[in-house]
Structure formats: structure tokens, C-alpha cells
Length: 150
Image (cartoon, rainbow, N blue to C red; front, top):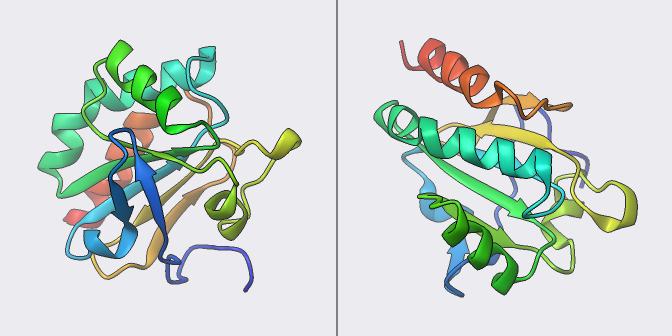
């Protein structure tokens, strides 16, 4: 299987969320999904990105989308991250980097690179941001969502 790019079907997967529940990407069909990969919870850039998504969450949901973050962190680490910053969206633990590899976003030390996929309600990748700057990224996502939802 090749890398995931714009226009391709987003590969389905199952991972545990911050509450230890199983999350399945295909369960989100019918909604847009902002699937973002980040290197490590509690680090500066990842915290900035998560807080921006938190502060923009209501706007993103109003546009028919859900935010889902994925990192190599453990369930305990992402739970602490979500609680500390009151993150209202789903975080997923990928300690074996299975989904990180599946989406071809593996960086140094097996950590995820900062990459975001906007997946439409049919499971197709509509937009891929390959080199994300955490500062202002949530607004970029909102602008694309607004254009696609017109």
C-alpha cells in the first residue's frame, strides 16, 4: 500500500483513545475528519497545535467535522495531555506506530511527523498538509473546510 495522498481513500484503522476505548476511523463516515498526527504530547509545538484545535473546536464541529489527533504516546500520556489542556476532541495512542506507518508520516525515532489529513464524509482525503506549522494551523483547516462545505 502506498502513501496516503489527496484523492485517495483514507485507510481504516482501530486505536485506543485517551479513555482506553477503541476508535475506528470508518465509524466517522458521514462526517468530515481532521486527522492530525503530532510527535509527542506535552511538547511545545504539539501543545500549541492542540490548544488551537481546542479553541477552534466549536467552529470545526459547526462545519460538520471532527478532530482526531494521533501520536506514538501511550494511552496514559494522551489522557494526561487531554485533561491538562481540556481537549474536547479524540486523541489516539499509536505506541507501535502502526497507523503512523500506514499513513507514511513516520519521522525520527518512530515519532509521527506533524501532518494533517482532511477526510471527507465518504472517507476520501480532500486535503493533506505535509509540513504543518502549529501556529495558525487550525485556521488553515477551517478555511479549507469552509471552502469545501460551500
